[in-house]
Length: 217
Image (cartoon, rainbow, N blue to C red):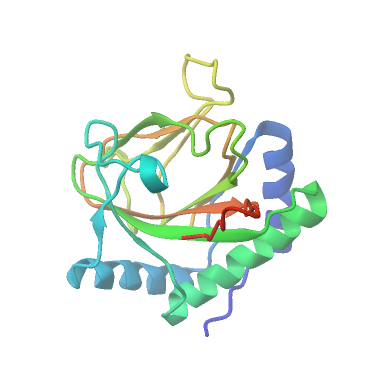
């Protein structure tokens, strides 16, 4: 398996920003060799026809809503060296957030997402308030040589009530990693002008009960 190298100081800064602002952004967080492997893995899924049009919502509430979201997706399962290394890196992040912020994060789920030219995702929240399933959202970009004007930027607001200009706009450069509080931080993906690839992931609590098992996928 590829080693999942990361900068501890950079991770500490990410977690501090997440606690202070509700979101955090780190450029060049993921090592270039792992980024390249993940890009290849994502493209291999595309070529094999394994990516499906992504919906909006979860379980019974999941619907295909092209007016809100235009993107194809496939779940990471750790079958390749690249996926396994990325999931190992996510485990380091999960452990560090639990140690620093006492979030009780239990598991991590993630998808490759491919936005075609014109693909977008309108402003939304990743977790319905009070459901307590997705706690921290993760975004990692897989776009080499992204240029101003290529589109696909991530707009982030700091509260549900904020209808003004975004607090931050993140260009989808390969290796950039974003963390957001899933219940609190609205965000949107601007229309891409060329194919845009990303990993989207969610750190979750164990929401299982005596009557319902809550698996990650």
